[in-house]
Image (cartoon, rainbow, N blue to C red; front, top):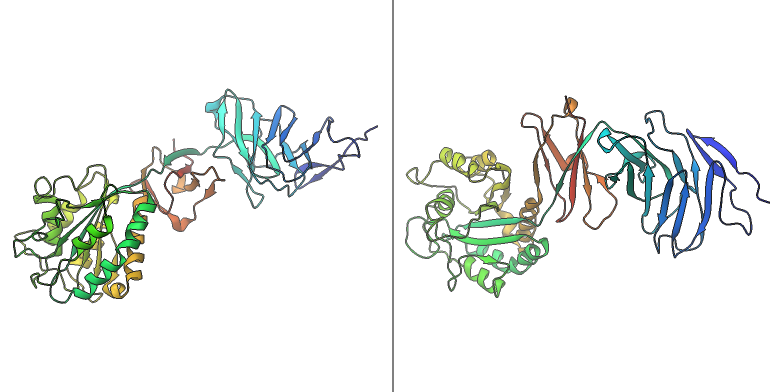
Length: 429
């Protein structure tokens, strides 16, 4: 005959000890259900709550238990409260749990279960179907449905669409830098291909004083192709020819003017098709001299005003400069005004420096800029990432996102294509 389990109250939860006896691996009592689950998986049910272990979740036959427990004081449960055991249960794949609860889906009821540190966290992959919440379960511990005043605003990361314009100084001193950029092309294109970004990659020079291919804002034409994209045949060869501008360009480098002419005056003619409405935009100026753009082409102030209105969301446009760090006027101030980064031209001493720089540029195409529907109480927001591979959601560190209270926008960086970002906050009413 089976003996009754001993229930231990520990840290606000009751837990069953010594549930299994030789020869009896499945059973129930008023406070627990238990069974042995092996590599083939199986279900364990108690008080209407069902935990399903998939094939391969457990490496060997393991005694698992689902017992009545007590909710922590900060949670008012809307369901039965249970604890999955034994403590430290290792799952090679998440189990699935279904929890019925009292209330309606619009009531703010959500599923709570432990994170890797043992703290109860909202299960962001939970799905509410008619008063039953189903969710993955990643480890042993408390499981319950309780109220959460926070709303969850999701944003799914998709493969980026980006137009990248390289404005390259082709004056007499720029031969070594062009050579380094050319040497790094295979690695840079590998990064672009691996990123999933749908890209256009074009080149123009800083020369506005002469009429030739690649001057005065015209994109360099290589056998009828003015940019490299995913479908380009021999991407490396075509782009190598594009960046090989030579060093006979004008000594009055006008990088800002070249970008302006390329994306404004020639956008519908010579460079038609390069810039896409739905794409993010990165302009990269590489020069060892200050910008000498004539005011008749565009002033610094007018450039900033124009650049910030190229896209509906300014956060999807960047101006980066690979420049002499001693520059104080022109490029640095414009880059700072429109958003972008300055890199020392010494980064082009080696191909690895240019590859690292371009990897950073490509990474910015996965920055979310989200307008929140509500206003967070006290400006408190949390950002979570739900990996595209179905892995466990995790909080994004404060360094990985920023909340602009004045604009009520959240910007999140560093997620991968297909990842879902969820912003949690308690809204003001």
